Length: 475
Image (cartoon, one colour):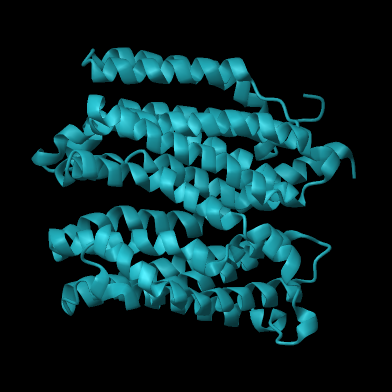
């Protein structure tokens, strides 16, 4: 087999995995998007706000309780030198230990609910159950991906989505369970997913209670730094909503929350690809990684830029169709949030280098810088620009993380990127944003979208043909 054929197979594998995983991932992402409209019809504003706070609180506690082992389940399962039984047994046991120890934090969680998330005090028991089922499902699904059973992973995603929809309709529409029904639908769907993966994936083969089946030190060394990493990511992603609420009010935050719906599409598309990319990046040969990362990032970054440009272009139209009259002003925050989401995707791609090299400490401190920058800029810019100040601060913080990670990852995988093209793309997106916010004709934005399409086509053409596995010998 020639080197060309090996390279082609590598790109074809990435494409195939992306398509298969997309089936499972995209269905769940669409679920979140469309159920939002359903929730507004079956829950009061107070109930929906409480349910949202429960999820946000659970997402904050999740990495602490699970000790970050869900990510380790994927990374170590992909490692050919590791015994899969040791990986699975160690990750499950650490998750259970972390969960039991988390009850020590109960008074702090209660204190947090009283001062920062009023309304969820009576639902802390649901939060703890939510965390347990979510933690176990994440470990099982990541371990399944680590075994490269991508079809099973995708099927599980579709089934879990279907079960969540059915239970949501049952608990909220027919039984009128309110907040409890909202949470129970997710908890029971996760529980069904755990049972499905365990039985169909025959994961019992990898579970053992024997001491020789555990290897805590290397997995903890990798996973513990991921705990603050995920917290810092949470701060960067969510803190702006808290600051907007504190400085301007819940009404402004309501507009800001609605404005995030459209830009999230970029992260959804990126996330589908990243699920497959993590497998390909880790399993790729060391001598091939430099060119592999270069080619993939070139096509990936161009795609994210073009999708982002279209999101900015259609931001006003989207809000006009999606939201009621009282939310029409939300379109103004979409452009900067879109820029933020694009660079969040770039940051995630470079984070793959840390996954490959098992450098979770680097992932942690780079996101720490981003979280600090984001909070400071939000506090400084919101008084002058309102919710758009929060969007600007988030955008800049992701750019800072990107710059740091480009510099930091060179000592691990020094792949080339077109700095000029990224700079020009960003400048054009900023021009799009300015023209839109200054109420210039939409035709100027259309012209800029076409310019972006032209300058990115030439750069990405070769890489896209490689990814699709359709390039001819000698091209």
